[in-house]
Length: 140
Ligand SMILES: Cc1cc2nc3c(=O)[nH]c(=O)nc-3n(C[C@H](O)[C@H](O)[C@H](O)COP(=O)(O)OP(=O)(O)OC[C@H]3O[C@@H](n4cnc5c(N)ncnc54)[C@H](O)[C@@H]3O)c2cc1C
Image 1 (tube, rainbow, N blue to C red):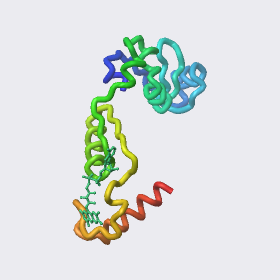
Image 2 (cartoon, rainbow, N blue to C red):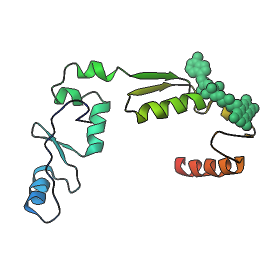
Image 3 (cartoon, rainbow, N blue to C red):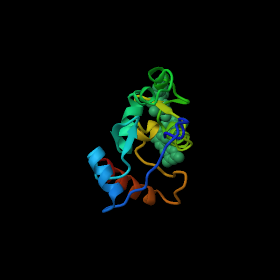
């Protein structure tokens, strides 16, 4: 993420039991890697960095101009989250584009389909049913 923003990153590789590890834990309080510091400020790991980015705070910390304003800009805005919208969103996000999906539901017409007779990529809807159960397991 930092490299994508054009920020120079200095990486120090550490492993447990070494002086570098002891220095990292003493400086950051963290016992996992990565531990990220920006201008000597301890940020935490990648998750904390991503939260700062989503809040529009990261660019300010990095000294990039108009961070808050840029946080509101998207590369792609997709309206609707039926199969077409969700597919577009997945591929857009996979390409690293900042993507926003605006929708009143998730699934589109699939939500009102009593039965799916076919679906792209599945030779049988029995397979699809088992994947839906897997997804429900993950979601709930
Ligand atoms: C009863 C039924 C059975 C079907 N069975 C099958 C099947 O077996 N196999 C198959 O392949 N296809 C089936 N289909 C068709 C399949 O569901 C559609 O082809 C597919 O859902 C179309 O996807 P879509 O993303 O283009 O549009 P949609 O699924 O219609 O999604 C449109 C999205 O846009 C949103 N939206 C619309 N207007 C606005 C707005 N103004 N602002 C914001 N959001 C908006 C909607 O809320 C929705 O999220 C079935 C459809 C029905 C109704």
